[in-house]
Length: 312
Length: 167
Image (cartoon, rainbow over all chains, first blue to last red; front, side, top):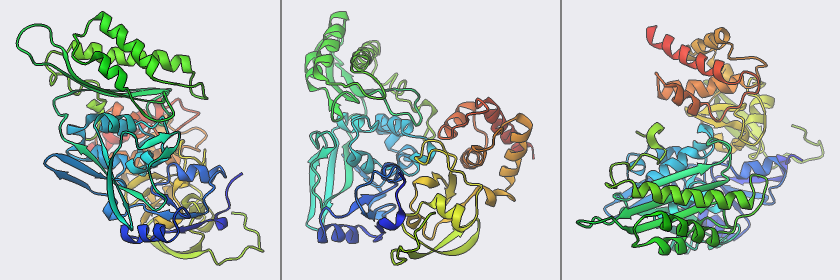
């Protein structure tokens, strides 16, 4: 049943200060709405329980990308298009740019926001594994002030998160320390555009640049979507391969560890069994390609999905 | 919009919208979808409703030059913005070339997706005058067509782009 617009309030206070003041006055009463690519879908389906909506779309304070020497601070209201078109994001954070490119189609990329993707908290969200491997931190804002916390652990369960009722995400901070890592991202789904992932991965790897001998994995960071109640960083799998030489045995170990670490389910898009198999395959493909890439910079953008990106 | 007469009017707000270059005042509920306002308040029925959930692109319009699905835009968020619908493209040169190319290449059959396809193609050509086939596939990836199988549509956009440079 479609919703009746006369049952809903929507206000657009026009500034971040006014928005958080409203949230502070009635914590939990107002549902923030940015580009509407999730909220309006629930509304159209008659499933939106909130009756009072607060538009934070296009608030200038949330729509900027700030570059400082050691990090980049992405306003939570930046759209996927903003990320793709930016001159630093695709270059320094290719995993995020490719996820942005795989989200929806152009029209949804023009409206969907990175902050909205976080608070919508879908375990299948394409951009969230990238934030996990890039060690993102969130700046949350309320009328009481700001606080900063790691994105890892922000989602505490399915659609649950460490966001208080009077808070908004103001910015997502990414440290600029991964530019020499080999990026790997892949979305497995019916199609890249529009379709929601069955499994998606974002990973970064760094091989030791030791003098002679076979290179070892100096550092590795792996996150998957659609395999757990939250976007998942695979800490155990990372630990299992850290410092090792990439050979057949290691690939098998990585696959087994990853499958133990995830908890996929059967749903309308896929099955637990398929997801587990694909998750293992993706991790093997990532490590295998990393091993086959002696110079981390050589194939840096090969699979980041950027080759067709507008941003380049 | 079905609205029971008993329902009070006080939740409505007065908005000014720039639709196809014309300034229009309208009294609406802020959560009304831009799609419904265009179709029911302004009689601009060229903007179609397909899925109503941002998946199909039939309701595509440009807001301040950016392609959006009007089914996902609460009208309050379009306040003061410049909205371009398929009707507003009648005198728009790239759109006329696209229309002609769609006719010649068989890019339109039942026609429901066509306004959205044209808007998405106008948006693409505006950003990239000479798109590759891959660019076109991506630019139109949010617009579904259940008749043509897409190839004729892609050819039409390629053709329109070609004619755009030779003109």
